Image (cartoon, rainbow, N blue to C red):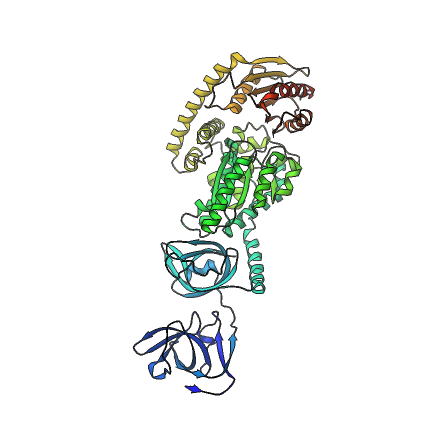
Length: 615
């Protein structure tokens, strides 16, 4: 059909249009798709295809070239008969069809069908074959594959974080649902804002934690409930939007317990939300911190990991979770590093907090904020948060707070409630053994998370016989080394009585203890302190284990405030480089080696000024 009439209207179908939007007698702009012996196939959009019979062709056709056609007939089976049209002059009119978009959470029911989705690109990964786009909407996370040629980036105009409209066929690949992309359009700002608003509202609703009671009755936990729920909501949203999570924790039993409880919940939620088979390894990372605060060494490692994955795999920058650390001003330099790269930070901790850190945090749970204290341990907080993140995890982790409580020597009433909760499966003695075994294992793991070994120790791998055997073996080895360390140290203890009546125990653990082996200086000082407390039953005891540039403090019966003493020493001894912190009565101090004597003398004077609990 050839015509020279002016101002003919040619319609352009959006990809959201279907066959029902095509009208016989209208002219449409299409694209030559392929050839057969009987004619030429033409795409009217990404989803609608018709045929020009060879008797209705007017020109020589070339694949992927535009063409104008007239719809002469739509058959009952949906096939479309086309006639080629040659126009000297015409105008184009887009056809905006009602969007018939499919939610990602429904793709499993659409295998083999063509769909339209509107979603956010969470990650772009270039493989040796196609480009893989990780897509997120309010209902789930799925992948889409775009292919131009092997190893070449498909749809380079699309970037991470863009709101896009994708059309394609839903396929099953390796047990996973995937969209084979036909078209990908980055939405205009106006369209994107509309879609993003809709996604955000639905995601916020989906991320809201269920309302369940805590495992125990605790006034402190109840006062913390709003902030605990906020943290659970933020973590759930990160999972639903495919934002990686990087969890840092203190490398002791309490910190490990808190982190592993969160780990179990997050991995469970990732798997239940349609994540790939290895999503838990690239969307969640747990790393121990040697110090009870977020060190520069930690954040540099984390930034290296995050920026590499961002550049290589197109991943979002991660959310940082800090547990059993993160509450003090010592954490601030690292937090500022992380915020420079746009990484949100969340803290759940039980060290005495400095208010100044909160300006760098999205959320902060700490019992001191509600007139509690360090007796509510990080492991207790982490377990309660984990239950809100993914409620089905409760049966696996309900014993973890009891282990954390005894491992961190909590004397809070909550400790005994958590022990009572699991006494039939994990009595107090077993919890103490597990905590000691974790401390021993983590000492040799150093900066590694030891994911499966730690899971075995916490009886999470469904092989209780192996877990029991591993625990007994590690406890036996740990106790042998502790006893040897105590036999070495006790002859070198310096004992005195302070003016306030407290027994002061001092030892140079650098020259009077085995180095570079278990127990390390902090635990060595703690073991000495525990044994001395039994010796002076009922008396106030302060133990100082020191080395060239550090002091580890343990106290019982003295109303000390270690963070306060650190600040005062820093001001009074400007050349000493004093820093550190911890709990009010348990902590550590660092300084320059040449000022050790001055720091020790002034520290002891300050301890002597504090009142005793019995006074």
